[in-house]
Amino acid sequence: MDHIVWKNTIYQKFTSRNYEKIENIANHHQCRLGKWFYEGEGRAFEHLKSYSQLEGYHKNVHDNGVQALELIKNDELTQSLEKLKLMESASEKVMSVLSQLSHEITDELAKNDDMEAKLGNKEDELF
Image (cartoon, rainbow, N blue to C red; front, side):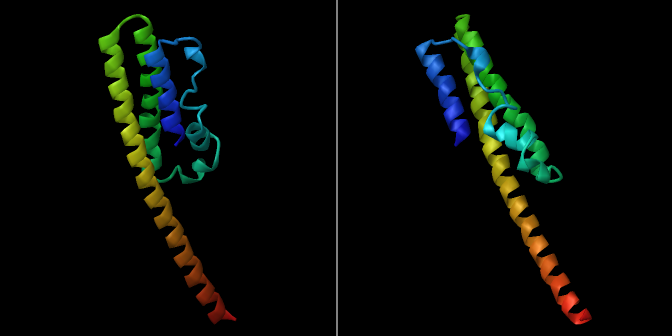
């Protein structure tokens, strides 16, 4: 949801031609997903395949969005629109990878529950 809000900010600035404080737009480390990924609970899943795929796509969303604003600020419409397309493409990939990651986390948690259940049964047999 946060990325929809973030992209909306990009589009609002783009359509209103409000290019003030472009440098203050959150980068891929500063947004909530970035904080989860780099500093927060997300790091517990860095061993999962999808986790490693997320970083590049996420960075591309932010980089292309800001670059689109910088280009339109300099009246480079065609290049700016191309950056917006790249932002959207990367955003779709972020959503897809997050879905995959969610499945991987669910599978891992289920395996851990199965393991705990098996260990619990073994523990009962020992005592």
